Length: 181
Image 1 (cartoon, rainbow, N blue to C red):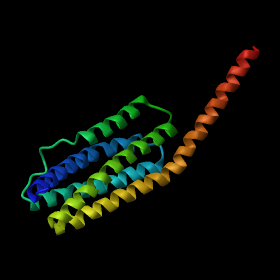
Image 2 (cartoon, one colour):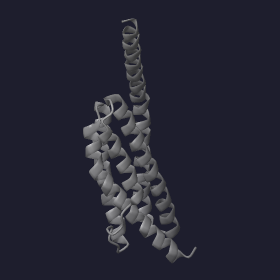
Image 3 (cartoon, rainbow, N blue to C red):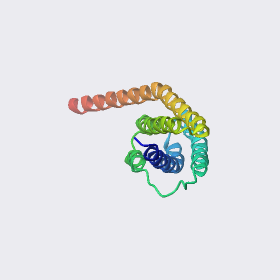
């Protein structure tokens, strides 16, 4: 692949990530608001601060390339956010919602990890030394966020299972009482 073609792809991918991050900056407060777990809410709020830093880093990288970050809409992130929003609108039980929010957030993190992994590689091939360190730092932060979500999921998913089991037990008890009556 010619360098100028790779550079074009690199710039397009940076713009796509910029769009993805700005969309997440708008979605994270809604996710934090919907969470019933204090730890999950705090995690979303913490990641919002990081996301704003990610946006600033991408702006810096694109400015150094003489490019505007605007003009591209990340349809992948748009779809992931829409799925998460639909789940919130369904208004499930708090434990189920928290488990679903973690699932949605991890999909987002994996999407971002893939994107930052690619642009880091492109930056290295293109000799974009300043960008490499910024992109790798963001990639590291996205991986750390994914790991924190995995740890939270261990506890929150168990709570969702236990809540579901107690509801199922209550349903069975009600049915048994109705059958005897």
